[in-house]
Image (cartoon, rainbow, N blue to C red; front, side, top):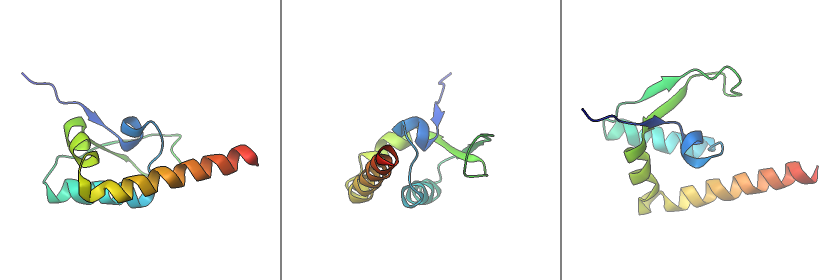
Length: 88
């Protein structure tokens, strides 16, 4: 029996994903008929369940050239936000 790992974007990236990237991944999962599980995170600022995806699906999505620009933009925005917080 094969065990499939499911993880959130936070688990995969090691940081919060922006809303545009989260939406793109969720849309891609729906189009590819990926099973999406959900996890409640009480301390989450999102106030809703967190989506969980197969780790192999996330790996493929993050290696897709079509998402490269969005992924880079998301990482840049995160770094800028973090830098502002550190300088505040």
